Image (tube, rainbow, N blue to C red):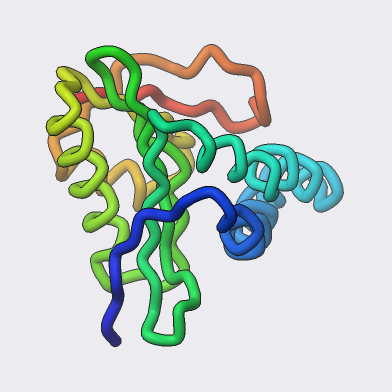
Length: 159
């Protein structure tokens, strides 16, 4: 199956939310009840949250689309001073190299913008993401101090 890598723009928040919220809800329901997971996913990955990301000129929202224009994977990179925060990697078509492609593209964008470091937060239980980060040269350096959905700690990875 062929995929096209695209940068989304304002006005595409609803499409992103329709893709991410169900994945995030299923993922977080492993640690909390279904209602809490859905509320958290709506707050963090609903249309309003994606709209804010898309409206921020320092944030690049990247999407792999299938031939029918449906989303197969998405992620974002937020650029701040000399650092790049790599956030929100969601992949539906697992095993096709889309996660690695999005990671590489976010690192490329960061380097082009002058970022000296890249940071990711990854849940301790998210083995595929931890393996991907380690293979790309990231190291776990700390535990995330943020308390959101803190039932499963997130590790801070940096490169």
